[in-house]
Image (cartoon, rainbow, N blue to C red):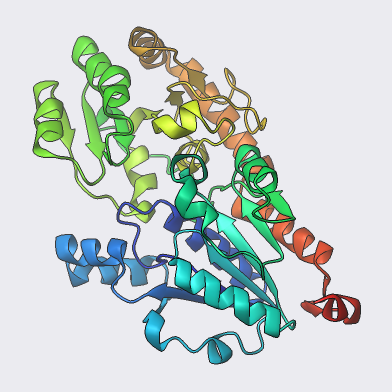
Length: 376
């Protein structure tokens, strides 16, 4: 198939976790022989912040880690959809795009039935920003890929679209895999961005205070940490490592004995079944994982076997102490988590699901069949 994708960025993962999954699925599609073009806005928010903070060296790192991937930068006012979508079989538009772009592509699809068009939602805005999400023109779209059952149901219940499928994120196991033999540098590592106050208290409760009380050797990586947050970490003896490219995360995980998952409040409270991509990646790297509460209503994992939940900060402290003092139990937990990833949650699994969805939409052998064209 010829697949055209419109996403915020494949080049930059600065405060842009969706880039991890995007890189993985594009790599998998290309490995299977599909042609993939990824369009991203020129000097988009994530890309601009990455260049401002890290400069051209960050782009060189990306090209070295992903030599086959590239983003096609565009300016919306100059984007020629007839040219960009010529010969396309499947077009996927991510929800973190301008309303105007979505509207233009929606109109284009209604006039051009030679391709299938899907909207991809990987954020909590369907519950936290209803006005913006309901304003997207999805009239020309064939369906929605939602990264959780709850989000899928929101689209259907609000009649934003007639068809929607659950399409969870997953680990790119070409990049995220165990790296045995690395010497341990510390006890606990947390990789996550500070963000917009969506989990400030949770970070304090589940990470900072347990580290302080147990006197662990710990490091935090991420961006958008205000000075007050950096000071909070320092007071607890936690090193702040700043931005960490996703492709360097496996090596960092290999140097620590355990990691944490601290979901943002909208996912923990309003969107059950959506862990975001971090747990997939941690388990794929074979590091023991302890998670703050979220409801695995979609049945992705085996809580208590693949990773351990902690209900509050004091239970986090107890569980961390248990894993750090019982390395055999920690290793078994890590093996279980890795097993679940390899059996159910790789980018290859997600592409299998996408190909199945394409079949439902009438894409036969990489192109729309006659019946599907007539229906378009």
